[in-house]
Image (cartoon, rainbow, N blue to C red):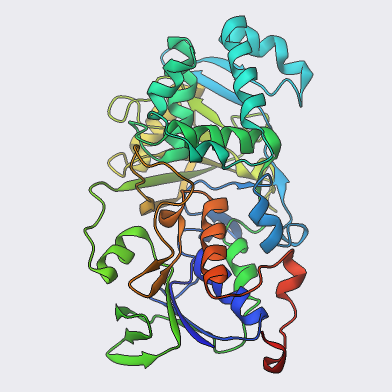
Length: 421
């Protein structure tokens, strides 16, 4: 079978790797010069810096089927989160007392006994064997869901709101409460990790499974059917076609209406000699406001993967690009008392960073896998996570009758065509 795949992001590369491992012929068309899509890493002063904030959750079952995690050189972030109130400089700790019992008392001082108990009950309920199960039932939006669970106003405003604004890239958190429970379960069951060479190493690993000539980068696809791809004025025939493009691109190619909103993210990266955090954890803005206090959170990735020169990167994440690096540094000066000696080294902006899934949607799958004969993959067809992205690729492979990998070694050996089912 000869399959054309549009898009060399994580979903497209997984589909291609799975097909190739089963002996099928694949061609992957990618409009950009680089593969990986939104899972991208750039280089600053010889050290990798992710485009946007990324972590790889080890609790996701799909990552163990597709990725050689040892080869990625993963380092786990600290399971605790800190919250800062910039108006006073006060910091509070929200710890995982099951993993770090020493954080129990500081956490209870931060959130109170009642909310601490409610967080614990939510953690235990979320950390089920099937992480995606909450998505199968109707749920309210995130803020209404937090109120329904009885969380106090201070916890909701100063901790949960900025945390899940960052996870969903939506200041209004117009995402399903069920999705936040899925994410909370992943944080409880596994670790949030960062690859040694940046998040871009994840799609690069899948791309390395493909044969020479399978990737056509800089190839702009303008139309597709169930069996053809129109690319740079040429119509190429395939047995099947897979669309593994972002939500807005897929909508345009299928002739559907684009999403009404767009979720974006911006990071400003600063270099300094002494990091403002003592551990590799998120520092959340407990007074986050897109206009008055727009820095959502800060982290220091070089606490996990040190730079050769001993300097550190401080990465500030925002939800739009209105606040430039100079203004961001002014805000951070209020956070930390002084940012003297910090230098701006990079900024990134990611448009269409996450798909829009309607709050009223019920189910772990958002779109059918087959739309007018074209097979579709990507997080917008399931839910916005690495788990959702990889499982969307698995849905396509299943529709094509291809055996799914049980682990990354299954992608290393290509069956000869005569052995294909």
